[in-house]
Length: 397
Image (cartoon, rainbow, N blue to C red):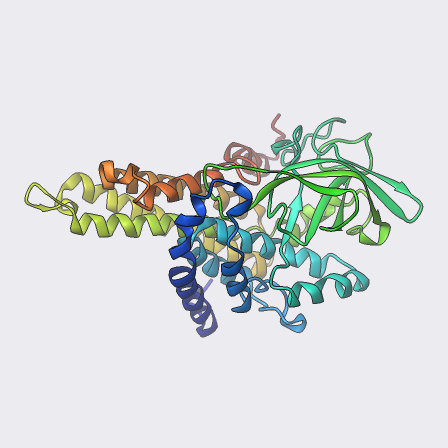
């Protein structure tokens, strides 16, 4: 593994950094403080990033995308996260699911969905798994009927009718295309008996319910989606019926090696604020960075960020280039990067003292934002259990 960045990776890193610093960060606090959750998405800034090629980075060059590998996406994701974690996650959601739309589809599906993805600067992707009664139990190998996704997809001729509710959906209400997981075999539970579908946002019977009013990461829309006899052609099905498990176990489905990149960027931004404050704030006749207690916190933050980035880059590299992809790398990265970023933000607030608790200080927002990653895509306890089961070969219940 050679982690010396290529000229192209450095250019994209600088492009993303300039965009984050000049376009994203200056507006982030104002959008974060808006009262209505539905008003917090900065569309003009997102469109600007799309015109720079950031939204379509994960789509192959032959379709007009950036053709970036997972390591490049992680490098760019960290830079965007340092600008605002909500904006970064908006792009990241589209990155994560673009390979599914491109490589887990047939020719007809690709021709239908990829060209508008390229052309429309507001074309975002989202995946719909979580439900009011189904969360992290879709991650664990629970196979009992009644466990996991309960939204129904019932076949009727050449179409399916979708009925159910999805909640906490990232890019919910803003995505143009949803990858919706629905149960097609009610005799099975967990990931078994589930089929994914490509569902356009304007499908009759699909409506946006509540836009969630979150404590952090407010520039990303999370919403409840309601499906009431939403009819989709069988041609929108991804793969075979009941094939969600096959998709999840594929390299594309497991390709989340870069999951922790954006949250790492938010942690880095908090660290940079803490370093600056430690150099400028005078207490006891000298900068607080000269006091041992603060110096130790600065050193601890730096250590956590560097170790997390090393784990992230290894996991990201392995998605595209390892002979045998090990999903534990992605799970480890999700856990370690989110917890490292959370601790870095907590320490950054402590370095700032009382000022860190004030809304005028950006550190309190970074802390609110990163907390979401402790639970997103399954909480960290679940992923530790998955790692243990993968290592020992023993099921955990």
